Image (cartoon, rainbow, N blue to C red; front, side, top):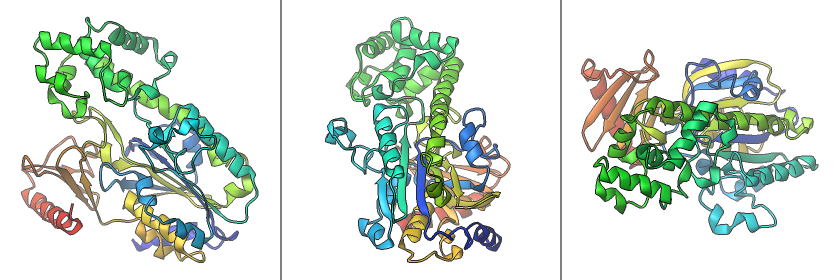
Length: 441
């Protein structure tokens, strides 16, 4: 740990703060799975701009969500407005009101609300409005450092009608599959039902006529229970019957290919827009004195463990997140192997804001590090604890199931070693239960 503090102290030297307090710009991304096998966690062919930006700075290779339904901006939203005023920061925007867009009819507002515009899909006219707002802000002269948290929503495959994909970007084979599934519901009812979750539901609150045709067909074939008609929405993540139906359907592997295409398509689009953000729309003076933090809220799994969607499990695909910190005037690249968490980033950010002068590094970055990570599935009573980046225990309190993984040698959690290591499992379970009682989860 001492080595880590010495390393980061060099990054946050007096030179880094020579212009006074740095601007703080946090870019958080929804459903952006960390890739532990990659040197920077980002695929170069998909996100070349992000990879280039992270040539200098600090990459945290072991950052996790402490709760698998945890947004970065929910932590930051706990910071009172007076903190920004007292610390001398201009609050440009804080994107945390996830579900408020429809209620306030943001499209009809002549001025985009500061607390709303950041939290938008990566491809939408509202996103463009947000860009226009930022261009204007960064072109103005200011006498205070700024604070901005920009949250990019929905990088996973499109789930709602507002986020329709650009079909022309798909490969010919995937385009053919997609159109067949949606245009021929009687021929491929299981596919139509599945893809309704990805493309055809309006906030998953009602079924389209195509989906209803497909569901009725599957009920007649006795491949789905009739009580599915009583559900207000279809959710593969909690419907074992439907999930098994899809997994056993013809062309299941092709479905996964299409899903991956859609997931990566959004990442590539976002990457094309990042240079404008990193340069603060050409304002070099501001960019040179800005602390950039790039983080993701949680991951996204595409059936690696028989699960789909985001934030529904305690596997690494769900709770492993990206974290990259680029201080001003940094010209080196370092990988930090210490465990960290989104909660730690929230505390660290607040400590920066509350400091009346540039703080000693060891008093702040200590907030980033966590000794153990607790995760809770938002759909089920699943918990996990990991220790020393070596072992990880999964605990299902309802079904009393336990799984133990050697994450140092098995980062994708494919081999359950619980029966072979009962003592380790018992010790981790004791720590987990103590932590749950302490946190009153």
